[in-house]
Amino acid sequence: MSRLLKRDLFGTVTHDVGPPGVATVIRDTTTARWWLVWLARHLARREAAALRRLAGLARVPQVVSSRGGVVVREWIEGVPMQQARPRDPRYFREALRLVRQLHARDLVHNDLAKEPNWLVTPEGLPALVDFQLAMHAPRRGRLFRALAHDDVRHLLKHKRSYLPERLTARQRRVLATPSLVTRVWRATGKRLYVFVTRRLLRWSDREGAGDRHL
Image (cartoon, rainbow, N blue to C red; front, top):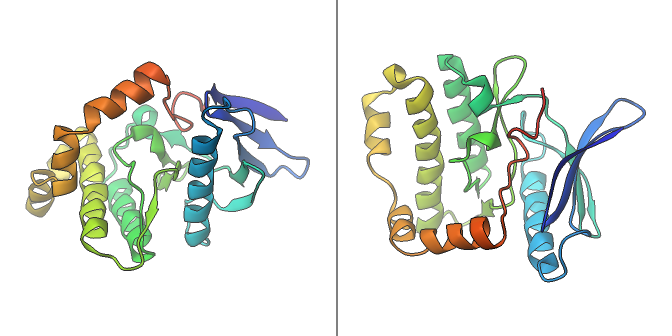
């Protein structure tokens, strides 16, 4: 049984439940517009590569297969953050631990500001989806450290929204200090990026958002 989660210029994303009852998410770029196929496939390959580097990590999707512009990954049961509105301190402790585990494998997510990329599992624990913008940096140079800082900062912004009274003094300092990468991005490319992706391409990658009817 298959259910369409999203269809856009970059292809389709479906939720599939096979005969053994194993649920997967299928990102199919073969239906992307011809002039965006190269970008859709690049993002799909990037996601598959990132997830393979995170193989075995709990509450991160595992790759089932990736070939011909189609990525099949594990479905993680959960409710998007903006729907679940987590207020349990344990959720944010485990979320920070999960982000640290990503960084320990030399990977930054790069898209943690989006609430739909955070799920709340039935056990009340955090899970992460959508690794299309993730970056692997085995040398862990300045750029990696800046992006890792922003991963943590974006998580803390969510904590500030749902559990502000549990922010520590150190976490408040992190919130107050965006990286140089973020400051430059805000001052230069962000408006153009939003215009191109939202206005021209009408792209909003929200596979974890209202697309999940749980």
